[in-house]
Length: 198
Image 1 (cartoon, rainbow, N blue to C red):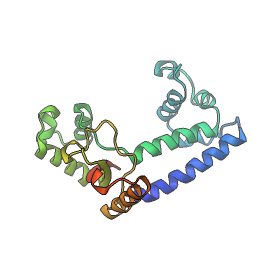
Image 2 (tube, one colour):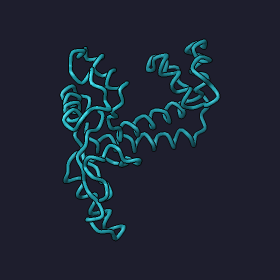
Image 3 (cartoon, one colour):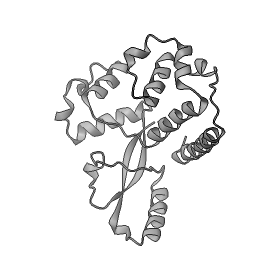
């Protein structure tokens, strides 16, 4: 599915959420017991309410978890936030995530599984992203950054781009719109290719 298609679905999900919120329905559809695992129901409750912790929720039944969630709009809010974060999610190079990835694929003998992430060079990083891509975990996308962001810093910026584009042409078209609307120069920005988590 392209990023544009994901954005379109997100738009309709947000419209539906707005309609559910305005109807103030206080019931929840029991179909969610079949659509979400117990672990996911606990995640939704923890996302909705900060006054619970995981240990408190493990004692509750699935029906009680659903009751805590409250209504369909709350479930949809969770789904919308997950969808949004998925659209702009980029791989992070933490030792824990790298180890988990290689363990899941049972690639225990790969040299990157045993080399500390902090010691990786550009070749190692590129190799890792290539493996993610070959396994269908990532997709090459394009994003617009301010001109001071160098290619080697595109994953390290404190504020990641809020939109990615499937093609460089789509990013260039969006950049032209931004420049037209803000009266800034195209030289104030740069388009970088990067990996996005599928």
